[in-house]
Image 1 (cartoon, rainbow over the protein chains, first blue to last red):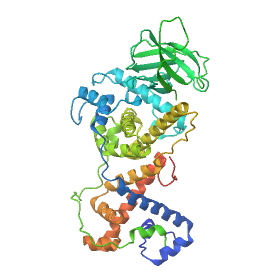
Image 2 (image 1 turned 120 degrees about the horizontal axis):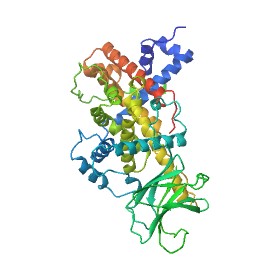
Image 3 (image 1 turned 180 degrees about the horizontal axis):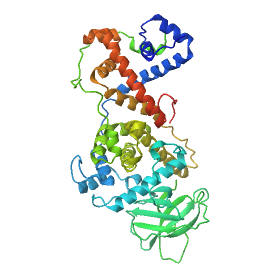
Image 4 (image 1 turned 90 degrees about the vertical axis):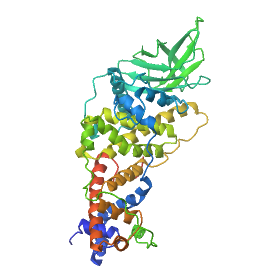
Length: 255
Length: 216
């Protein structure tokens, strides 16, 4: 039996076969039936694709943020790069994940690209950890740029009564270090301390104090980070008491 | 007779035909955009965003409940795509399919981090995990196919749109447009064949497409 060619199958998929023999053949032939099913699947998608015509473009601040993060300054829709910073920050209520490290000026600097490379690596590594599906993906065949590998990341959200303008990010990097970025913390008469907490038991240990917007803290090599995975930033006082004050400002889970 | 065939066999009452003004002499929209993007042409980033930004935002919005999160994902996808542009191979698949796969991965990451944080906070409340709003695979397929259709040469695109969007039979299309029935069928066959070929290439590399069943 001769199989149907694609033209005949397409006409069959439209229920407009050029000969009655075509439909009869499909009834007997599994290979052609599978081909036909594929075409019918495609036809369904084409009909449904009407729903995704004329989709609304993203709001302007999305492009502004892209231009800023990639250092591409030409062809912005309107407004300068500096304006883009302001418009990207305001315009909607602050949320924990709204606050990312942003440079005060939009000019491309090496620091921007290095940080971007780190975050891209972080995203890639987190994706690999979470989905396990990167192996064999052909668009990841380029070697990772030579940076300390980011093993996990946490978005730190304002905790409890802390104003929502407080935020931070933590990155666990190779070599038992935690890189921390914080912003908008309420003033404290003492200092900010960083803890790793096991959320199942609330046991914890301190890894040091926050030095500024960006700090890098050492983690004991024998710490079980599978358990102690909640990053906590607290407000502490010079009260001769090393225990956690109970006043958590930021929390986030490493993942 | 297959059940799905009745979708486009239903007769419709006559409605005024509006033919979109488009340069029908153009061949398939020249697609060196992917090559320029991979090569680091900065204007290609803006063009890619203009062409596909809405689709990326649409996929993120269908999968997440929070519009602001969807916009954040959109931004992150284009930044990440640009950073890893050297690894995109235009010969292996379409630019849109590549971007949508990045989008899906980032949405999954975000959802899982949020779910873990929620579990810590709501451990006692024992809230069940919310299901994804839509199947990512299916939305990706719709977006890729819509893009392929829009980039067909004018005659093929018009005929396929009349068949699929307006639900006309081949004969009705011939009557409506004044084009001979045989020519209508020819345009539709070529258009379908082109879309099928490209959709299959995309499906092999992005993990969606005809070889895969539904599922996030």
